[in-house]
Image 1 (cartoon, rainbow, N blue to C red):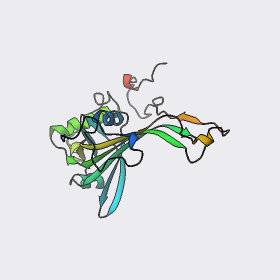
Image 2 (spheres, helix red, strand yellow):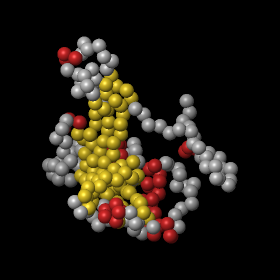
Image 3 (cartoon, one colour):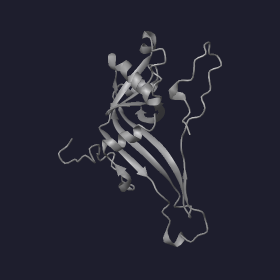
Image 4 (cartoon, rainbow, N blue to C red):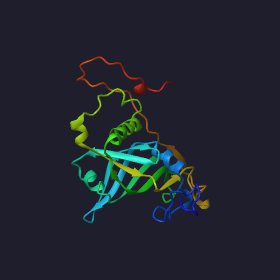
Amino acid sequence: MKATQTATDELKTNRVRLRRRPTRGHYDYETVASILDATFLCHIGFTVDDQPFVIPTSFGRDGRRLYVHGSAASRMLKQLKTSIPLCLTVTLLDGLVLARSAFNHSMNYRSVVVLGSASLVEGDEKLTALKIMSEHILKGRWDDVRLPNAKEMKATSVLALDIEEASAKIRSGPPLDDDEDLDFPCWAGVLPIVQTTGQPVPDPGSRSETPLPDYLMPPKG
């Protein structure tokens, strides 16, 4: 950490500094990590031969290190393991902010942008990384399933990205209408958006009667 940095801007660089609505920006590791831990879907942006690509994929976090994986033959994994610059983003939509004017409508959200380059993961860390990603998506699943064999491990690439340059942006609260619009006869407020899981649907091709594991049980109440 640079001597001029504080704990609240340890991940801040000029490249990730918010220009628009800077008060919504956060550059501390704890805030960034809390948003990353609330989802497992990210989008990775990179450029190949002057053509930008943005690919959705799952990820896992282990401290200040992020892991992504995929087929060893995929274009994204082949390119990223050469340490080209990348941008990893996540977004959580928390609500629609409904204002009295069309112009002032907005959304409540939490988002993260991580810049850097990825490195190929090999050896013991590769299997550990796959477990971390599995547990990040659905805690408890890794201990139930058959682990990957040598052929499957060879067909899979795992990349690591360290969280060293990142920002979070958060918007919360009610609409910000102009004073002259506050008397306009239109409902205003926030429509919350919550992502949740449904009732598990068993595979009709199952050859054994396996009880539903605890980590798939619907929440009580």
